[in-house]
Length: 217
View (tube, rainbow, N blue to C red):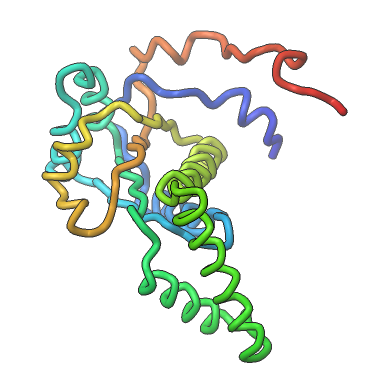
């Protein structure tokens, strides 16, 4: 596989073929790749809501109204849509779940190693909550790492994708009861196969010149 060619050829899909569906086994493989996304101190501050049938996609599309209405067809015509959510705060229960999973996975050689991991995570959380005062922003940064991994994975699997940041958060919150679950909606990702009418498929890729974005020390 030539990863550079994958990155050169993938693009943000603007229109999907509603008659084409991602095979179930391939979608499950994408979810496995998503689950393996990295995050700072392996904090995994995310939850992914999957819409893989018409009624589910309609619920997501409710938030694509007004100035965001142009995004609704992407969700409705996609094969699958995933709402990436971020935990509004990192509570003790989540930290305990992480630590328990670390232990199940065999990451600790002894109790001292386990305590060290617990103390490290707690220290980071206290820093971002109390000193930086922006723990939700820090957590959401991790969610966007997961988004990047999913976009790359989709490109490798020849699946088209669109990250959507424009949506009515209040409507989505009410529809899915996100606040009650301690979640905030971060980004919507649609997946599927491009329509022949997708104008963006025919446009050249555009990126800033190297000398504008790289500083070589």
